[in-house]
Image (cartoon, rainbow, N blue to C red; front, side, top):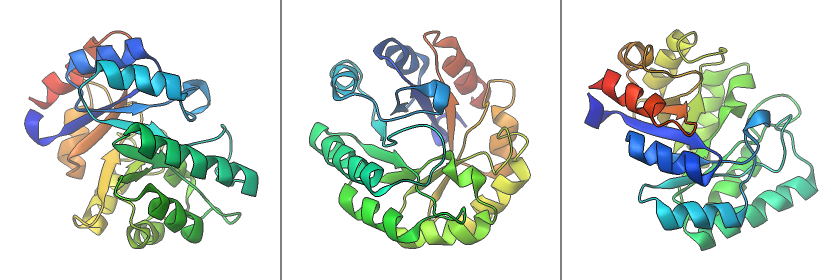
Length: 219
């Protein structure tokens, strides 16, 4: 099962990125300020990680912590950050924009996906505050989003496994559902077996054993 399931590691420093790669992660999500759920990393950090790791890097595009409803100024900052991500050679953009009703902001999501060009877009855990995930999954598919990072609306991926299963079924290969939220070596196999997901997302610190244990559990 190891080769069939891609493990993405969330990191916020060069040391964590190197640890994740040593542990066997096959993609990084690079963020700053993980204490508020992740914001856009600096260009300096991205370049340092790109210079020293060989696996793909997904770059968080988020101007601040807090809600996922953004002002025009914040959206302009996101546009600029996407342009920078493209210029620096990021492999994936990670973003999420909701409207004031708590739904996916279809127009702005479509615009940001178009701005990313050929760079795939992951819609992050903003998805977990959406009330009707089945409905808004179709909005993301229509907008051209490649992947959704979600715990199924629950606190953790294992708690949201039933909702994740329904999302994987609804996606039907049109978009990737990537479970995230306290994914660990002791629960990842159950998450994958119950949901049918082919990618998972886990936080990595400077100890590569967390990622290594996840991969060993999938073997």
